[in-house]
Image (cartoon, rainbow, N blue to C red; front, side, top):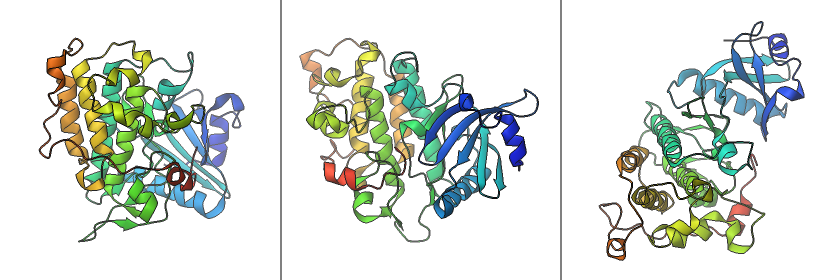
Length: 335
């Protein structure tokens, strides 16, 4: 549906700062009401920054206009009026996963283990749907701030400005200018510009780590190795006796140990070399096992040696190391 600029000015009370609910490199998101106090919507107003802004607007309209899935945000309409480019979505009352994981008290309630797994599963289903579409779509910007939550904490992927059509025929990848967000982009993509669905799987692994630890992938407020979540947390992820040391304290120990090990192991796999990363349907299968894992007490030493998951090709090889210089070389699309 096409909206006039005047309708969206009215919906947001002239883009009132009080209606602002989010902002990023792309522009601003406002809460609005269509018609006199009618349907509540989120209205994204893109910065009028010429070609890139228009390209991202077109990408959103193109993908969300034709892709429909319970775990993708629903695009209600758009507006193209001179310099003004806007998108109108269903409003997501619980905000983003980022708000709940990283914001201080009062801004987002801490998420229980069960809710975190519900969000992980829904987000995985959304990505899997994109990868398995008739014309494959690579999302390219999977991160906690792009996972929005409805009133029941069902997740929906938002912001398709960087999405790309996947390779066709016998091509293995799409070559593209490196875009994305620091910390979430796969190392082989940063190094070569070659984009595959496995790049999204890497980003999924990063978000799983953030869900386990309650920490952001790049955190300049921390000191030394702790600034880079992946480097800091990796030694703990496949050690059952140490994992609890990096688990999010906001969980207050309320999580099934076995399930936590399975998720940590899955995250390691997703962060591994592209060749051994699981596909998103494989990730879903593992998350289904996680969600059915029974709550167990702290592991006894005799249990510690057994692997939490039987992967056919043994434990994951050490993931490629990403140096801080690699991370810093990524053009900051959104911060």
